[in-house]
Image (cartoon, rainbow, N blue to C red; front, side, top):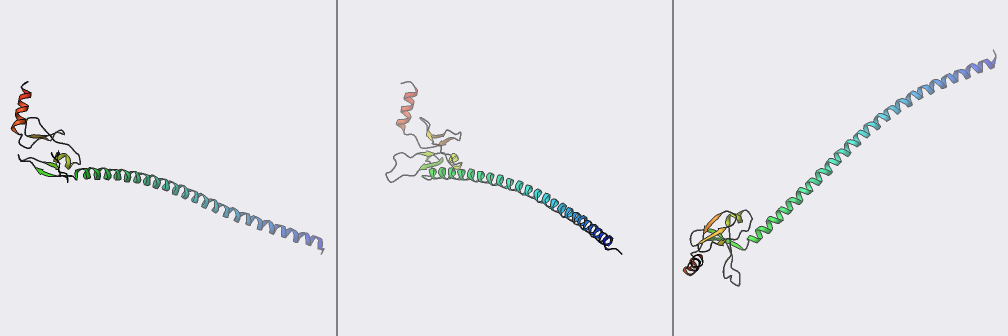
Length: 166
């Protein structure tokens, strides 16, 4: 037997084996590459989903902060209103009406200021004014006339005098 044809046959067998291994390795590489591509796509989808969730959370946080700021402003406004009303106390007028009267200070206020109790309950400060020539305090917000104090006779006479054109 000759060695050259034998060597050629062995070399050919080795080449066939190498091609078979290369084909098998290529198939395995393609399979691994396909799995990696699938995982990359799944990860990309997950990243997109997480970004959308993050954006929704950021929007929710902004909305919550805006609500908190609005509530804080409301509380501040209500606190200010209540502190404004803090210098007034419930008062029953001599004729049976009810309102809030300014508390006398250390200097002694000569004429108290009256507030409508209904308006004050809503946090609003509405000053009551005497209707000229009457004994009623009037609320300009539509809560009507509140029986106040008896009008001294000289004020009533002045009103009648000026009303009659004299």
